[in-house]
Length: 288
Image (cartoon, rainbow, N blue to C red; front, side, top):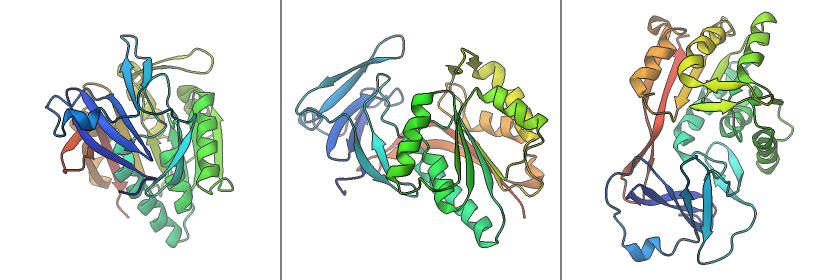
């Protein structure tokens, strides 16, 4: 493995051992109900480990060497991304999205090769992996997140990946309010991406609850799809939002007879090929 990339080394006992650039990290993994494959001595080599509190946040325990405030790693289809240790255990990347990033890039490239305009809307966009994959492939992207910190991190990633001059609108806004305005403006997009959290708050304290608000949001997004749109990608890390559940939700705005819909667990493979489940995703690709 190249020292400037990401790799899952092992998982088990509700934890995962990750190589993130030059550093070894241990983080919680609720789905890792099995026993670790590697010896305990390998896990003890970790440079830092994250422990989660009941409220969702937690703390990092630095073990074998001090970590910098930030460092970079290279990710397929995206380029270099900035890594940081956050109070919630996140690093700024979701490795389970790698295959989605590659597929999104392919879909945008197909439109680019046909000289078709590609406007993409990325909601709950976090630090911008999907945004950068689409922008690198030739799309104009509206990148929206309620967190100013995440949007600024996305901008930083774009600069680090050599994409700062790509046509990306970096937006800090409440998703529901923004989408409602886009419906009134009759805006249209050729691709829509969303990875909604279970719960969240907008920049002005707006509340997001996935079980209440995802179905009406999807109905509004259906009105933003251009007649020649190409794809909608819906993913989730929330309990109960299985591949089948996401398929049923997405089918309400993307009828199966108008294209191809595929869904599955998002996974990360460790060094021995064992898969760690990490959420679910569903992709609709419209028939040409």
